[in-house]
Length: 154
Image (tube, rainbow, N blue to C red; front, side, top):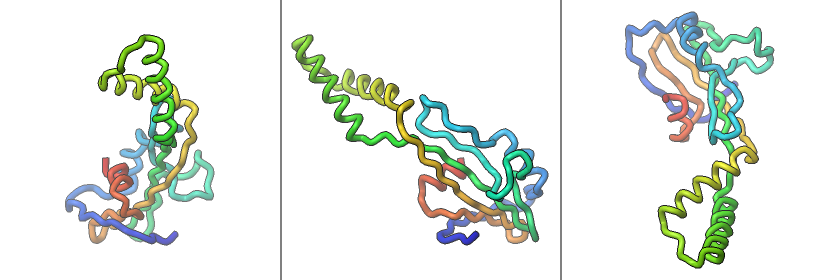
């Protein structure tokens, strides 16, 4: 695998950068599909795509380097769809109750619309690969997108 765009971070020295330690730390952060009501879900998967999930390790180590892969599942809910549904609901309230809808109520309506549309939204999967250089104490990410970097570092 080639890293096309990288972002690197200097790691503190003295931390235990060992495969067993990292495997144990990531064991609680394994990827599970996103719940229908949530807009995003993430977790670690094996960086070795060709192995089955049961036997594939979460950390692939070789020559002082440890490869990781964070998988992110995002729900795709276009803002135009939300805006149209909101306009329809506002129009319905204005006609039936003969009143203007205040700003705070519009915000509550929008949150309600998003909550009802999320279970029907499409999902997009992304993999963010990274490796830890234990010799030079670097974390190297295969992305420069600030949003994806934030996913990995949080």
